[in-house]
Image (cartoon, rainbow over all chains, first blue to last red; front, side, top):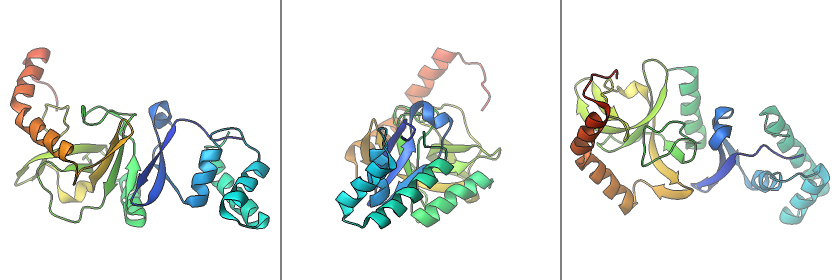
Length: 87
Length: 145
């Protein structure tokens, strides 16, 4: 799975947000706020990834348990899917 | 204010900022629609000439234009690439104020960027000549606001 393309990330006041650019602005407006975990997953999903590979990436970066990483990945993917941003 | 306007204001209250991509070219050359990004925050000080405000028009559109003057009825607004007058803006229509933008991916802080301040000054100063050029190019026929 991967996320839709046509987004850029902007850093402001210590926050990272993603906004649509180009043709994507026709179907998506607003901003997506990304915390540390979400930012890593957002970046990773620029390419086609499996859920397991996302879990591994989180565990490696943040030294968290597999259980926590899997929960975070699932939650993030659900949010993306709900927003229509997941392919 | 429309539901969409209230949503943007709520985002500013909750997140401190609303970041988005303008769609049109009314603020060229400063901003190009669909390419550049803008950060809008809550208005916490008196409005000044030169400020760029995000606001809702009477017919529910959201515009990001510059304050070019003041009147008894409200703030006088105009896009940097616009030459027709707008109805005066009241405080209640304001969603927020531009604090930063990204032009071709490069961030610009409107309160600290010298280049931006020079641009604002030059753009204001050059308006009469630009208006004349616009009229010559488009004819002197009356155009709808």
